[in-house]
Length: 245
Image (tube, rainbow, N blue to C red; front, side, top):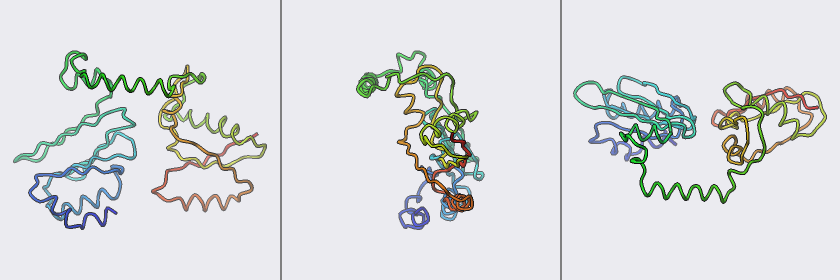
């Protein structure tokens, strides 16, 4: 655990003779464990020791100043952006700078100082691109599976409405009264855009092997107990009322 790690002798030794620390953490930027690492480092190195937490797991773009000499940073959502964070250390107070760089090849090449994208390319990069395209062909990722009349998005909840109104009743295939569904809210990873829908689009939208477990005749009081018993470290869930006809 983090609690065990920060009291190990090697943790203290790793911070010796350093001007600052960068912690790469697979946890959200507001996770309580971030504060534990911060407090232990402050105990060992003092209040003016620069600290950067590079966080992840919650898949958002986020930045927070923990104190005058420490920040925590998350770079975004499923490679939408690449996070850039710099720290200037000198006689004055540390200067933290951050930027979220869109993963577009033109923007990346401009960010790195190339005026033409062709100058940004390398032979190794071309080889990797060729390999990726071949894998896509082998997996038939561009195979058209259907057509979506609308864009389904988490932002306006349209993906959840489609799921509740269409998918769950279709998959349950049961004639019953109002039904409560318990679903992880991390189930949808991206938008599904209007128009042709390929295998790649479906995987991008929901890269999970979803299953449905139907349990009839559950009391409302038991559902309430279940919701209260869900642990914070499990995937967040939503309770929705779905009419199955």
